[in-house]
Image 1 (tube, rainbow, N blue to C red):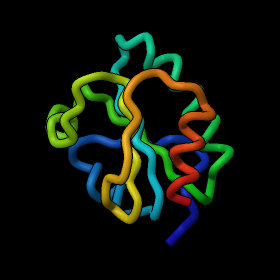
Image 2 (image 1 turned 120 degrees about the horizontal axis):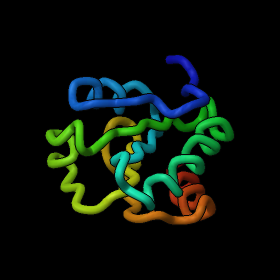
Image 3 (image 1 turned 30 degrees about the vertical axis):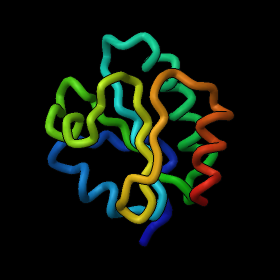
Length: 110
């Protein structure tokens, strides 16, 4: 297995399952282009992807374009950050939160 990428990977309904099974620890940012709070979280996710390269993989899922995956994880509000460990969802964060809160959640699973 290769180290995780240093930038978020765009995932969709067809690639989601293979992405979450590819790396041991993953955070998926569920967002939409019209969402203001999502635009606040996006640069934080980009920075964390560089900072945690090789330790955590980051994905981005456009909820408008991928209703099957959004429905499967009952995403009712965005941004929603889904955390997966070994292919299983272990946590989620809903809303625009500070970088420290996201890091604190990831560190629980590292």
